[in-house]
Length: 455
Image (cartoon, rainbow, N blue to C red; front, side, top):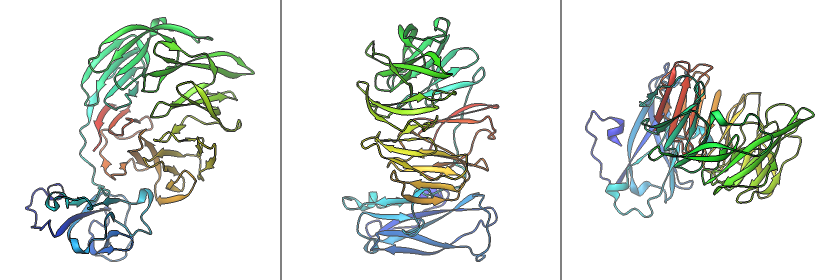
């Protein structure tokens, strides 16, 4: 812990058999860079430990630009600790909830060596930007990135040249595939992509077309035929393919089938939108108005099958941000509705304003960013926490990581609270792609493209 906090000085002595080292890291702004530790409160009833700080200049207004961190390291007597498990946080338990709370749970019940395991560092916001090794990625123009389900590989689809480039998560170039487009991941190591020169244009029925099936581990490929088009892989050996019947009263009429082990299921109406992380459920949109296919009502299928397990009301468009929670038991869609798949119960999450983004957390809570700020809700609509925030968020498929880009172009990783020094000044054209595991991040802007692994 001390090597992280102050590597230039010798750590003070501590008897870990009788004491426990804890660090509290508090964010500060440019107008109030100093902070004093006033108390460390140990609440045995709530099993909660938190710090109390104060501004040495008194109760004065401070800017919220979050330019640095003040870290306090303290030694706590083991005899004074609450019963395990207990929580160490930056706030009292009645105010510590959701994205505004930095907390860690400690369980010393099965501790076998105090000297080895008694030091607990609090994973709290460190508002000094984290040094990040950004790897420049050379492209010929705009690209569409496709992360593998395990986050170990990244396929870049060159929009100007109809080519693919395969990278490792560390930025190493594994392979390139000229003349192939619209890739999707069949498994964590296997992808499929269509041959651009032979793809049918706007097929109105099932059509097999030339493709390659690639192996990411060594970059090798094998020629294949694959159903066209808009393939969407589930990461577990299956993929949907879609085509469009003639429009009816100006509304698109998509059809889809599911490919697995070389066979395609019978066509069904609808446009595939998203697979669950386990690859056992699929969201389909049924267009009911002119516009993109996601301007339609939702149906959920179980796989293998596919077998319909849920249909939502036919008046609510699901929208392009539709996503499963990490467990695959819920779907969030629209602005923002949450449906429990087992019961069909729908909860409307209250939002303010027109610019709403949301992301799932690992415990199936949903973070919502809107005009009011950043709020955490349970799937039944219970408000769990709130933090002032203005900006955009996106989350990883496994719920482990949420990227938060505020209105001052400061990017924060939740729940660690680390701020990330971006390789470029964010512009309206800057886009971010987080890997499904929350570890890899690809950034693209007019100034270039970069890849990094998050702390």
